[in-house]
Length: 365
Image 1 (cartoon, rainbow, N blue to C red):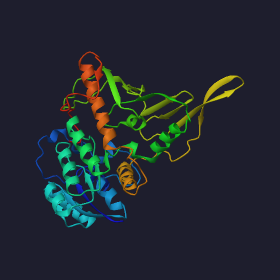
Image 2 (cartoon, rainbow, N blue to C red):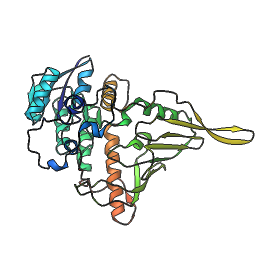
Image 3 (cartoon, helix red, strand yellow):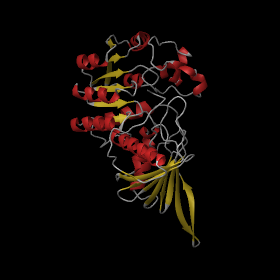
Image 4 (cartoon, one colour):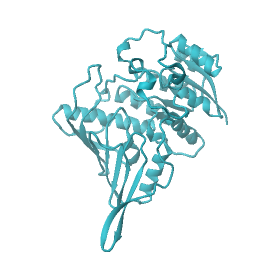
């Protein structure tokens, strides 16, 4: 079955990431941004931020164009130079400066929303109203818990798969890790250790219960540019009794069981599997070969997220790994951790009563 695809926002993750190596320090921005000094993607040329990588597509535009069952038919963006670059790169003439106009006119079935965080909830809900069958968005999911609720609710009611963020959780190796847990490879899951960083919620994929309460401490002052994300340590406990520990300097995710451990240190390092083996009346924890695809290549997270959307539509997947539901849950946990830290480590119950609570970001606005 074929699908018509479209993208909203032709910024760094929308399109420019895959053009940067050809364009150097890009000059395709004619629009006066309200806070140009916050745009980290302007301040540093590509080669200073990233090591050379493979040719695997990283932007949402390239990910959509890369799939044979998707015809990339339209894009919406305020910047005329970006629209011109998109038209030249992909041979698509249906370009718009207004996202609503594009959605209502083109009625795309697969939509990538890589615009600023502000307005992303409204665009997601509008895409559903206009007949979208699958949606991927850039991170962070939204500014407030209420906005995330709206996005997840609208997609759930319409049966539309929603993936929020091109992060490593989209990679197939995470499914391997969850499968090992389900098969009892490390015994009963005792705890999870992870880090809270820029909505890389690696832990959220591995819990089955719902967050019940959190305590947080050691939060840092807001950065000079305005970031209000949580930057401390904390503990979350789910309604089925699982503990998730958040620690500065922690690995991306550590799954500790009664008979072993599964570890992903982060930064696209390979997964490690450790099992307890009894020998000569002693129990030793030794490393075992990883039984599947390894997480060892930078780039491709947008493709992997889109793969989950397409697998869901094909009936191969019950829920995307980095689904909107899980990302919204992680956002609420981070908001609660920040509230707890601000109140001297007081326990904060979940779900939050005040759904208007949120975070301020100085990246990917």
